[in-house]
Image (cartoon, rainbow, N blue to C red; front, side, top):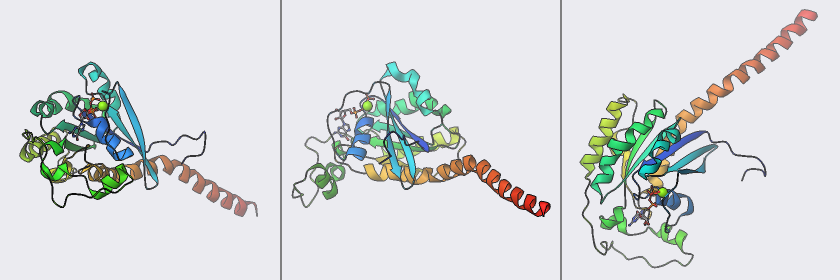
Length: 246
Ligand SMILES: Nc1nc2c(ncn2[C@@H]2O[C@H](COP(=O)(O)OP(=O)(O)OP(=O)(O)O)[C@@H](O)[C@H]2O)c(=O)[nH]1
Ligand SMILES: [Mg+2]
């Protein structure tokens, strides 16, 4: 907890982009509040500060509605990682990532990390339909008995985007950004999640946190090096002055 009146300063920024209704706010809410509740469509953007070890990471939730599109590149400015989110039951939300959202990321860091996230997996994947015991505990103090095997969604929807589609998109993005060689492999950066059940939500965010750590360390050492240099210099200067005046 920061001291009263003292603001915690983010070391690095992660931005969540994607069409309206894909579940960006719900994903952030699931991760930070450990619960799923009704959301209002986001207006503009909002951020959450996550402490990760000794570092502070700001995660920016953006509005997917067309009318706020102009703000997107402002939110992406200086971002170290971008989460491109679509709804697994909605092919168009996947198409929009490349058509509408990718260009917004031109203002992000040139070495930014990308993740592609297909949310609402609970609607199509029996495995994602079940909450983990940890999620149930977090959501409800009384520990409910879990079914011993996954139950399929009540009315399973057709999954409209395959893993091959997401991997192909990731590889196109990496080529477009000229990040071949420095980016993690597609298999590590394409996720299917459910903000509703918590499926893959922690692992998605925390994979990104771990991947942005080197950028944080680099950024800190760059901003700290002039101070270190001056301190060293003063100490040396005093020493030599002392010696000189003997
Ligand atoms: N079944 C299911 N529904 C979800 C999931 N995530 C979000 N929803 C629902 O989808 C709707 C939209 O969720 P939001 O989190 O508000 O979507 P958003 O992407 O933030 O939308 P904008 O703020 O308008 O850009 C809400 O009714 C959520 O309850 C999920 O994982 N599974
Ligand atoms: Mg939202």
